[in-house]
Image (cartoon, rainbow, N blue to C red; front, side, top):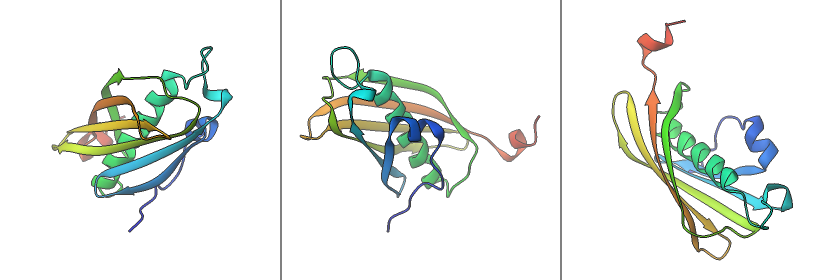
Length: 135
């Protein structure tokens, strides 16, 4: 079954990030990387890959939580393995461990040839009902 995110935000729209699926605590985001997201060396800017990973991990967690909307990244670690050339780029995020208020996720980014370009790990905070009542 294909579960898509409920909405895309302005960052995804601006960068051109789309979503292939969210299901079973996983998410795949895609990008057709053109010159508008490349750095001066002609490869996809690392910040764009970071945005893809952070967003995919967030949507993977949302799926695992059944759509609970209140979460945010605490820490995201990036390991850039090789430059991502313009063209097709995909980020595959997955839930690693889910606690009551903390979740651990991972995301791999590959280029159009299937080569690993970057690996990310993320720690996310899940707001509790008590926290949602706070101002």
